Figure 1: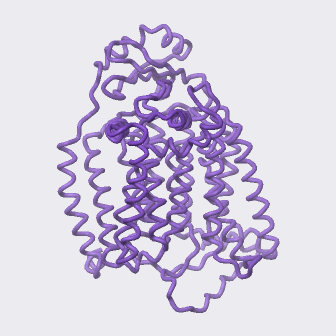
Figure 2 (figure 1 turned 30 degrees about the vertical axis):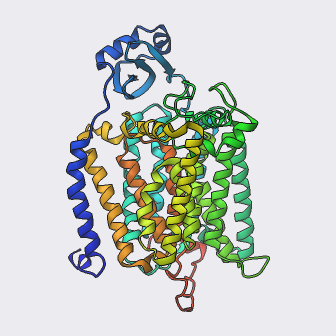
Figure 3 (figure 1 turned 180 degrees about the vertical axis):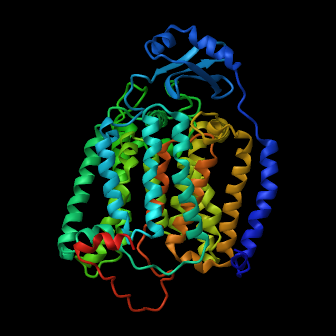
Length: 563
């Protein structure tokens, strides 16, 4: 490690990261404030139990404990548990009145389509994911990445059965492993690729390349049809889908969503303005005014975003066509495996069937990385993603660091132009006080409290600011690394890995985590950890391709896998 730190270009990044950590940790710790409780915990639980609606929701649940946590300064969330499983929740106002009640004991799923939660469906998707992303021999770091990604189905199953804290904790091993691997892929030296054989090719070694491509095409079409049928017909959209469509409907009526949203979704106006504005065409055709309205449009957009992301991953892995009509079979097979890796990621079908905006964000991030060699277009799309979900703004320093001269000016101009147009939209809808109203509403995400947090589950919320300081240190280290060695940024996979690492780290230190957020990072991991090896520079001289690895006969498959 000491020898690595002394290498040119790495030591300054480490020093800057340590300085940021040393300064940010105490500052964030001192300024950290727990959300204000509108009611004492025992008072909120008492008032909830006085409500006939809560009593009806708890009937037959055999609940044994209750916890109260503040949502904001006016609402307290009271959760009732049978063992470690949440069976009901209620929002209690500061005056003791119950605002909303949700009985969970008799709900088979939290949101999305029940078909996507079926063990057989999750198992089949997991098997396809391993076959498309895994390689032989098994003793490869890539397979560790595949295993880490596969374990992320655990928090989905735990949340399905009401284990909120268990869901947040169940994601830690997989996300932690992927964070370390993406950080190393982004900040470390690019190691030479080791010879390996995709598992799918190993199992189909006797097939001709054209036959293998035909089977992969059929699998991709079949999986796309599954997404359309399950996603578009989903009967249980997530509240984020309703919030996006209700906010878009307010814009259609000429109103700023902030302060004008219906109260059926708690803090439904807590998202940046583009989370609503981009859904305006749908709201124009099918307005949504309450949770009793149809959000089929949001479900359709989520499914389309998943399929468009698959196309992006296909084109990235397959590379350019060798003629106007076709690609080499091996290249097309690589692209098809990449697309299938994304679509077969087990939680994705559930995520798409909720209609959440997180799948749309995933598409934005994937295309922003693919447009990396065009700084203006890439930064413009990243800015749109930032005004859509805020979190992508954390990537801006890293994306600007390796740029120079005209490319840097173009990227900054794109960022400013998109931001100015967005603020202009807010002012046009809400007047000069519109931006302040948006900031006030969005701030809820920074101050909220939730049981779906590893910090709360482990009882270590006092250490959360230190974790947030570590994220700032990671961003600083990545920016300095690329600032001193801009040639490293010619590798799209490195940018994708750094972006995935930062987004994973932000999810881990946030006040709230849901498996829906996994959609953000999987395309970036597909473009980095699961990407075919490529030269780091487009201008590098042509070199002969290495000889393909010898594929053993079927009788030796076990021996190959155990090497």
